[in-house]
Amino acid sequence: MTARQTKTAETRAHLFDCALTLFSQRGYAATSIRDIIQAAGVTQPTLYYHFEDKVDLFRKLVEHYYGKNLQQLKSAIESLPDCQSRLLAMVQSSFEFCIADPRVSCLLFQTYYGPPVEEIKGILDKLTTKRFRLVTDTIQSGIESGELAPADPEFLALSFCCLMDQPINIFSRKKRPGQYLTRDLAMALVGIFLRGGGRKN
Amino acid sequence: MTARQTKTAETRAHLFDCALTLFSQRGYAATSIRDIIQAAGVTQPTLYYHFEDKVDLFRKLVEHYYGKNLQQLKSAIESLPDCQSRLLAMVQSSFEFCIADPRVSCLLFQTYYGPPVEEIKGILDKLTTKRFRLVTDTIQSGIESGELAPADPEFLALSFCCLMDQPINIFSRKKRPGQYLTRDLAMALVGIFLRGGGRKN
DNA sequence: TCTCAAGTATAACGATCGTTATATTTAACT
DNA sequence: AGTTAAATATAACGATCGTTATACTTGAGA
Image (cartoon, each protein chain N blue to C red):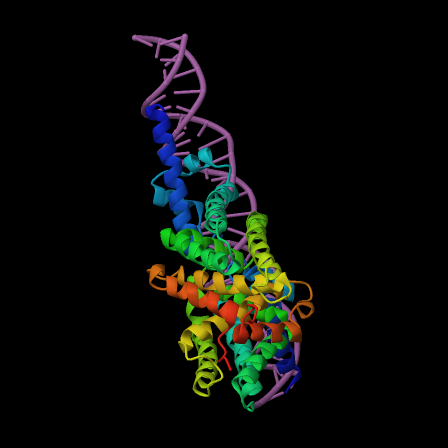
C-alpha cells in the first residue's frame, strides 16, 4: 500500500465515521452533505469522489455495520443448546453491540421506527427481515423443543423484538447507554418474555 | 356563528386535517408547508394567518389529538377493579384509538421513536411522560395488590409500553391497521406481559 | 525527470425550504 | 350603502439543499 493509497483510505474511513456520527444524531434526512464534509474537514467533491451520492453513503454505512451486527448475533447463539440461552444471548449481544458503538444501534433503530424516508426505505428492510427471521427461527425451535408455549411463532417473535429492541432504541440516545443496557436488564427482559411480570399463584 | 366564521373554521379544520395526513405519512421534517397548503387548496399566507408557523401548527395538532388519546385512556381504566383488566383496557383503548384514525398514532409514535427533531422535541416529551406515568401508576397498584410480581415498577412499565406501543407503531403504517390490532392481539400481548410465552411446568 | 491520473478544491447550478411584504377580496357592522 | 377589518392571494425574500462543471494539486510509474 503506497502512501497515497493510505491517505485515500483514511479519508474515506473518516468520512464514513463522521457520517455515522451525524446520521445517528440527527437522522438521514436532517443531516446534510455539508454537515458531513465540514465535520470531516474536506470539500463536497471529495465526498462525491468516494461515494456516488448521499444514498450510496448511507447504504454502505448501514450494510457495513448491520452486517457486523447480524454476524455477532449469529455467532452469539450458534453453540447454545436451549432456547432460553439463545434468547438471552441475543439480547446481551444486542446490548453489547450498542454499548460498543451506540451510534450504530441509534441510527438503525430510529431510522427503522421513525418516519419513512423514501430514498432509503429498501436498504434497512432487507436486513431487518433477516434479523427478524433469526429471531423467529430461534423461537420456532423453542416451541418445537417444548421450552415455549405452542403459540404463533411470528407473534412471539414480535413480542420478543419489542422487548429487546425498544430499550435499545430508547437508551442508545442517552449519554452512557451501558448504564442502562446492563446484563440485569437483559435477564429481566427475557424473564418477562418467558414468565411474564404477573404474580405466580 | 356567522357564515364568515363558519367558513374560517372550516378552513382551519381542513388545514389541520391535511397537515395531520401529511405529517403522519412523511413525518414533520419531510412535510413542507407547500405540501400542506397544496393539499388543503389554499395559499401560504392563509396557513400563516391561522397558525404562527410550522412548529405552532404541529404543536396544536399534537396537543389536540394526544389530549384526546390520554383522555380516552384514563376513562377506559378508571372504573376497572383489577390491574389485569386495566392493562388490557389500556391496550385495547390504544388499539381502538389507532383504528379510529391511524394517522394520529402513526404520527405520534414514529415521531417519538424516530430521529430527534430539534424544534419539536419538547412538545411530545411532556405528553408521553404523562402517559408513561399513567402506566407506571397502574403497574404500581398492581404490585401493591399482589397481582404483579414485586419488581421495579419503572421496568415493568417500560416492558409493558414496549409490548403495547411497538405493534401500534408498526401496524399503524399498514393499509388496514384494524386487521392486525385485534382484540386477540391485545389479549395475547397482555398475556405475554403477565405470564410470558414460556412453557409452564 | 516527466507524464498522467488519482485525489481534492473553488465556485456555482437549479430546486426547495420557511417565511413575509404587499395587495386584493369579501362579509359584517354602522 | 359605505366603511372597515377579517381573510385570502400574488409574488418574492434569503437560506439551504443535493449535486456537479471545472480547475488545481500531488504522488506513482515510465
